[in-house]
Length: 172
Image (cartoon, rainbow, N blue to C red; front, side, top):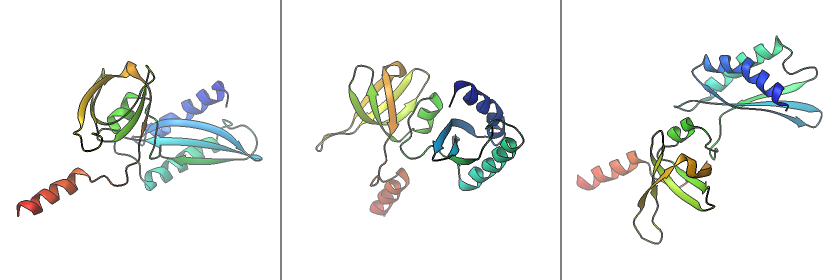
């Protein structure tokens, strides 16, 4: 997609997404066979649910139908959320990933997997999990030390509520 088309689509669609108290994270136009697909990714601090996605899809579809932003020819509109293993590229992404496990590629070339504890204007406070029975360690990294960061999926993690409930049961 050309930068001009991308910018035009963003200018057209972002106000509609913002009107729903959501962030427009990504716009992509791809060719799939003879059709084109316009993929729009939305998010918020509280995440997005299917009702919000459906409403934004209706709003964007109506706006695109009344303009020539997608040009001639058929296309499919897909509206969705960032997904489980999203890349962290904006400050707000790091804020939304607090308490999540993230894989970092640092500018010096090292890789690090750690849980985000806090985020401020300068960087992140992390908890690096211990290996082979060792305790977790604290680490601070600045944003300018991060080359890439991606949230990791955790299947067996107990959330804090589960841990609290287990402690209360043990004490009872």
